[in-house]
Image 1: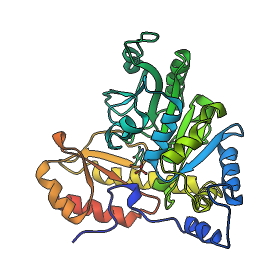
Image 2 (image 1 turned 120 degrees about the vertical axis):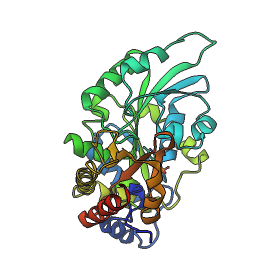
Image 3 (image 1 turned 180 degrees about the horizontal axis):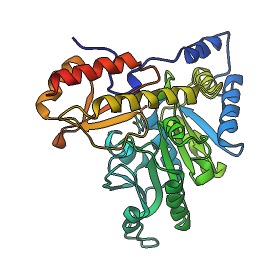
Image 4 (image 1 turned 45 degrees about the vertical axis):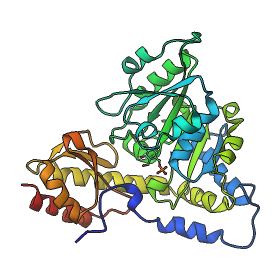
Length: 343
Ligand SMILES: Cc1ncc(COP(=O)(O)O)c(C=O)c1O
């Protein structure tokens, strides 16, 4: 029988009770639509507490829209965006970037999901040549799609390099909170303070019902965002229900507590599975994902008991993730099941 408390992804979890309470607490009377309400102002002020006063922030429904609309706003059709081959932007947005941003994605193979200057450099070419795409943005994901975490120094090197070349840094921070917990930093320390220009900030994967934010650390960059958000069908009319979630998420350390819990559970999961014969961990476990290979024949029997994704079919690599509400006993049951099936 399929066990519901699985490890497929952190968005399989429900809603944190404080978030649900926050939604309910604003469900009173009428409120101005499209974000001109008091609750949205309060949520934006919370963002300013965490990311600095000099930002513009906009809410959207999902992470794909945050990435695409943020990047659309700062590029034009003859630009290129540099990203890792594994970037969500490249693999899991159904060529939305190609359609809606309409410029070139330059995708770079990596061993651990992280870009480095050495990897990026060969692609920063053609400036001023009308025959070539004009490099405009380097997009990095923190934590990466392979569960690894950039150090602040690594990010700073990339952003200095980008700015030296008059380019911008976009960060896909769908799970930024997990990275901040791992690095023991504030959210600002690993974004605006080290040169990130545009941030997609995730809430859904860390206890919210839905809602992501696009944060511009240089306000001028955001001038066209409101128009692209509306054209992109992401301007929520009952915005207060996203705003209330973000206000709660960024209050009382909720973002931190949720991410701390999922990171901690992931370390327990890692310890439980790493020595199981035939299970080989393939990436450093630094946030809330464990990547492992196991013989192909065991995957579908295991999936009958626990739903999860095969990340790379070629090498029989799977991804297991923990959430804000994963329990130790969920992990022990899962590890027992793996031990029973994988011999
Ligand atoms: C790294 C990363 N970025 C962005 C997203 C986009 O999320 P959504 O499904 O909300 O569009 C995801 C979702 O899995 C993700 O893992």
